[in-house]
Image 1: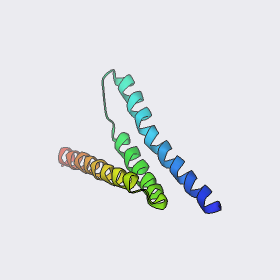
Image 2 (image 1 turned 60 degrees about the vertical axis):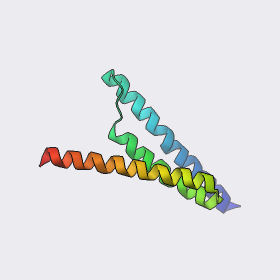
Image 3 (image 1 turned 120 degrees about the vertical axis):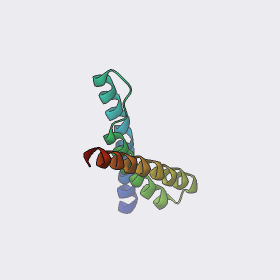
Length: 91
């Protein structure tokens, strides 16, 4: 029973991370008066995706697992491209 409660908490935490990415994107866009996807969006996406993937694995839900695993590739790739771009500008 306690294990299930902890995993439900993990699922909610992942959902909180995932929702936070939209709030961050909205706030930054409003401040700049244009649509912007800040780096924090991708970090919250990655954190939420990892947490929700962990929960999906615990639930043994193949649909949820495939969806989250696929998203993680996109989030990690975007962070990689951003890092490469920043290194090129700095170097």
